[in-house]
Length: 116
Image (cartoon, rainbow, N blue to C red; front, side, top):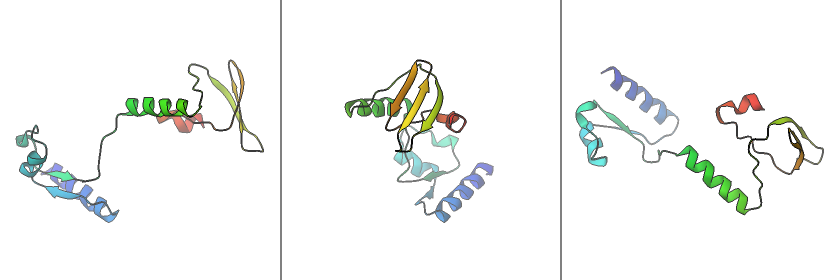
């Protein structure tokens, strides 16, 4: 009951934002996901374009693709300063020296804003 109210609210917000969500019954959800135990649900919300992501696998795939395109990935080398040059390139000052880079990717995840 309370959880169903939450689903209805989430559904309404999604529809307002243009998402193609649909409230479905537990038996409809079980038909889509046979391993689901419908006894534990009062309802479900279906989003045909929703998905799940493996963050670790995605990071590894991105790094492999970047390396194939010529990127150099440096691990365990703390950045102490980062300065953008007038031409748009970067001087990345690290504990192991300064690196000049055309592009810099902040991979701080949850802490990205703190990193800058």
